Image (cartoon, rainbow, N blue to C red; front, side, top):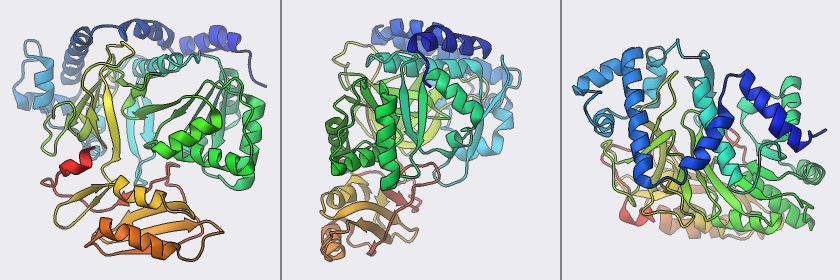
Length: 461
């Protein structure tokens, strides 16, 4: 039985955060103010917080003490941005190898173990602290307020991470009911299960729907095929994250649910990095995240140019992740959003580094180069493109029952101009499983590109 939103907002959530020692709601109110600061004022705030983080990391962790000492930097006098850029980017391999040396055991509130699912199946284990958790949660609450969704209003999650499902015991379900949250699995998306999900949506009547765009689009397409338009009179917004929301998916979600679709970008290790506002600008949570876009040499590139996203969480004191290489690619936006917020813009997130196809001559093609021709094919329900280490490509298609028998031939003809001269084959399969994290990966490459390979200009659009 869902709680009355007023009780959740004014009693349950404040009590929960106080018991955990988190000042989440105070941070929310502060961030509702700081979002309107001028960009220069936000940049000054970032510099202050970055200097404090670097000084902390130097004083309390052996890993960063060595790293910073090698630069010869003066953490009191030198520009903290210059100090940051003198440090080498941090890799996942380094985190796995030096986790204990990067950790501050005396952090107030104690160390909180956390892990990512890992797209390769190998989890990344790290530590959080209460202050960082509170800032991440505050950023999430603020993004909900942008769309009129307040703490305590009902939210339904169509999610697939086993990290959440491991926690789905009686206590977790009880807590979700107090918070007015409902969690549905994105792993099982059979027709019967999707019928049940549509029924549950109408019973629960959430104010917000949250999930992977691929899973939500699958549910919306199922509703359309069933001739159902769910009665969701309380729904205000659909939040999508974890994957790139492709234009046809967005159009389908807007048609089905009749509300705005808003993108979010974050990760367990990186925090709540950026979120779209109602005017469409993807605002970086500048109060607690410093974002860089790096080239293959680890150097920042100007706004508008594509590179790898590197993060420094300014409130992660238990285990600082300084210049952490996310493996995602994107570019910073120029100028300011029409909404008037001073928060900087992340113009695009183009996907994981492995969401590109690599060719022996050094050419890189974005996943969309194969997604577009496959997506436009009639009679294809699902697809996945996998590139092996020898550059060869296997394309798996799930055909509609009504497909005319020429699906494979048409796919080969469409893909030949894109994949030539790489060897590839097309297979028709009954289904494509999600990855270990519950996400649908349209394109997966196992090729390890050399540092000299850079994306051609044509793929930066």
